[in-house]
Length: 174
Image 1 (cartoon, rainbow, N blue to C red):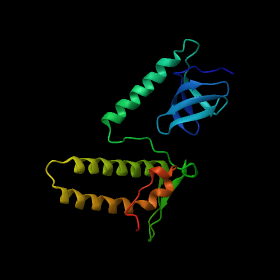
Image 2 (cartoon, rainbow, N blue to C red):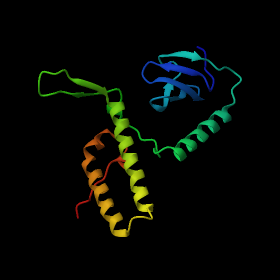
Image 3 (cartoon, rainbow, N blue to C red):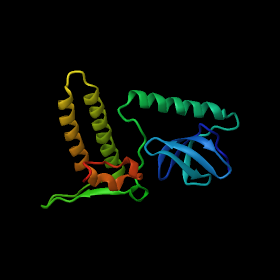
Image 4 (cartoon, rainbow, N blue to C red):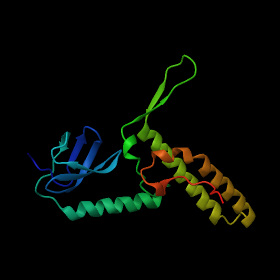
């Protein structure tokens, strides 16, 4: 069995295309285009797109990945990586109309990504409201209450999140 070096590109049967970012005696750490960082067994089912062998600089790929994460956090409206609950990975959402029209199916991962984007954009809007020089304190409080209600309306989607700390939180009962 050929051991791939850091920087090798693969196409995994479950996670899609990715780059090997670390190697141990049993596992590859692979950053996948759609799924983020996953640990897979050396003998997993994948196709080698481009193999990197012995001349591996293990530090530089970590540095590049860290730098890329910092750049994305700085310039994107998405500030953190949010994981979908394991039970939903690879699942699909089925919308069934009440009449004779065909069902609409979409991958839960895609739907989850859109929910996370909505949450992140609401957070950005919240930050902009709180830092606005054009709004007085009462206007900021009023808008913050609307945002809290929006979060409350989205709590149904909390079932999709792997970590409770990522959940939507509305108004807490007293």
